[in-house]
Amino acid sequence: MNFEMLSVFILLFVVVSLFVSDKVRLDVVAIGAILALLLSGLLTPTEALSGFGDPVLLLIAGLFIVGEGLFKTGIAFAVGDWLMGVAGTNELKLTVMLMLVVAGLSAFMSSTGAVAIFIPIVLSLAAKADIAPSQLLMPISIAALLGGMLTLIGTPPNLIVSTQLEREGLEPFSFFSFAPIGLVILIVGIVYVVIAKKYLLPNQSSKGKTNRKKQTLKDMVIAYNLQGEMLRLKLDDSSGIVDQTIEEAKLLSRYNTMVIGIERNNLLIPVRSSTKLKSGDSLLVAGAETALSSLYTNEKLEKISIGDYEVKRIKKELGLAEVMMTPRSSLIGNSLIDLNFRQHHNLTVLGVKRMGKILEEEFSNLALEFGDTLLVAGAWKDIALLQEVSDDFLILDLPKEMEEVSPNKEKAPYALGILAVMLLLMTFNLVPSVTAVLLAALAMVITGSLSMNDAYRSLNAQSLVLIAVHQDVLMPPLS
Image (cartoon, rainbow, N blue to C red):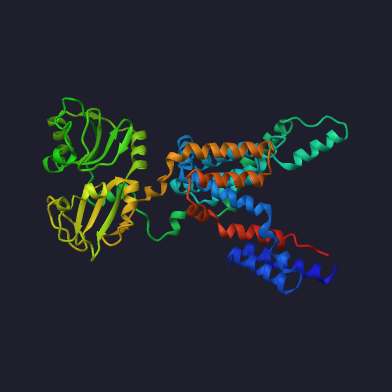
């Protein structure tokens, strides 16, 4: 063993020790290792940076973008909701379900791709179930490797062995020859992971790492003392407010109820002062029980129950935000009615606080003051636009549910199609895997499933640096 080889082994020992200790950021250790190889002359600059041009790095980067496209179009949340519906928040059931699904996917594509696709889904599930992300991420990584043992194309060694048999004139393996043994190994692996992860993986949930718990929609409603009901009231030709606009109906002043959404032809549309109410519309109305009772009795509206599915759908479409008047706000000194607030912002003001106290009286006619906070309700996209009106409003709080809003959900069919094509290209080796992934990433941007800025933001720099350095530090050229 010469001096160069000994130096590499020493460096490798130091790097692995630092990784295990977890006292220094992993990417800092990786970059430090590259610099050590450069300064010692063991690697030339070209050799040291060769890992950043490795096809594996481009493949991972492309998969980050594809995963972000699934996140932005709501597909990741839809899969997460399905898994939650089957397994609930039970960590054991979630772990088993995730491992089975990822292993099944990995049987027909690369294990790297299967894991990358499920990363945003797993992070969402972990947040909902208050589970440490590591408790679910490590199991899907193992499941992806085990899933490769189920089919002929699941992992490259399977194909290599089968091809060699054919070259020797022997019968090659069939597509599912590996399945019987692979299934046994998968089951044993799942049992082991379920038992061992409790002792070997960190179990601190992401919620415990934040000093301030993010408010939910329910928390914001309680903070403004609006714990009344929300009903869906259907209009027909006999209803007293049919063919009237929201402004003409004056439901707030007459019944002290607020329309926060209108369902028309199975679509939720913005509530504007000029919106004309039509027969067949369903109003999502909030208010006290007695006020709502007076409304649907006097105006002859049909009361329709809101099931769990409708509640989830409404939360995906409509939300709340708390905003504060800035010192330079053009709204100061004017009332909500004078400003025609609903018409200009497509949002309904549900409550107003002044000096931290809720204004109990009719606030729509009160002149707004600096420091007043408003609880507004409306479509998530209109709430997001409030952040651009920086001179008038300061966004104080957005509910946790906004994290699950899919801004490009109408592009979900495109994203699903892109994912399906990518999987087909990778499964049947029609093009190299890195080509299939880069084509899918580009298609996600071209179809509008996510913006180019979102694509750049999706790239996890720390992971990419570690992968690139892995090619140089763990496998440097030894002469």
